[in-house]
Length: 435
View 1 (spheres, one colour):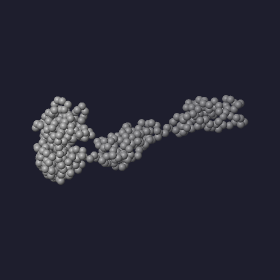
View 2: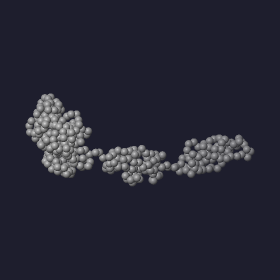
View 3: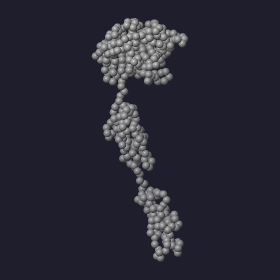
View 4: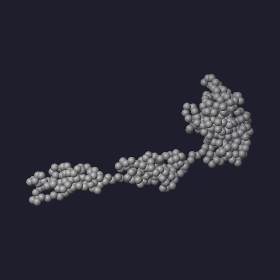
């Protein structure tokens, strides 16, 4: 087990004490080859490191001036030590970073690993909410791990990686790392008005009222009490403006201090109080007769307001109005239409346009879009449908809210967003909004 960095040394003498030189023979063959013809020193350092686990032979010939052939010593030998295999280096560079917070519940784990001899490595993965974490993978070749499913919100996870090579099956454990996942996003408030009176969450509600539901707690509350401000007709549709004002469409002619509003009009309500003590003032926002809405089919049954000022509506049937740019603008009751213009008692139209083409959604062409809310951050359209429906493979009725997610090329993927019967709402939805 001689070190691979070893050198050779010996002693030499002469009966007359003549000066001596030495021929050095060294190698893995026996007899060894000459490597130095003549030197005065009694040591020799082979160039570089020797090979591991190898037998070397060496011989020294002592010479003086009278005896140039010299006196050879015996052939000596030694064997070098077997190679030392170092354990793998500890895994490093954790992702998520150690101590990270607010980590997405969909996160995966990754790290880096290395070995002093560049030996192939495998990794044991330990992961969980306990510290130390339990083993989840005994051995894998990749430097990443994707926990199955989503992680829990607001939870601290611990993880540790053990790097192993063939010579070190026990491996080198890295440190125990940790991260904490993000808290669950706040569920949006859902606002609904029913088509008939009833009780929801212990609250008596009429078609003149708007209820709110906290998506996190599931708690219902009165948001707009219509009878407090003289509302006697059912609310057909409503939407919120950024400052908190409420846009309302009534199912029949509704008298207010600001005037009488028809099912073709949109009234603006400025609340000074909401809830069971609702108070505020009414004003004109959209006069349907000014822009050509007149037939029964053109009564507004869905409503939303966009941040850029556009008003979105859907009508009970076919819509046909003049477009200022020329020609006639037409839409159907499954469509969501955008209106751009000036608002108030004297409403003027700048343009009409199709915001959502209902015919692009499988199964929606035969339906009536009766409520709408647009998530402008994602482009998702939340909708209620009049009566029973099957749209995009999703079935429901007018107690439910569906989500239409843009999937490219003017098409949408449909999912059920909110099922009324599972959330204590057993009345049909007249209008709805989200925040």
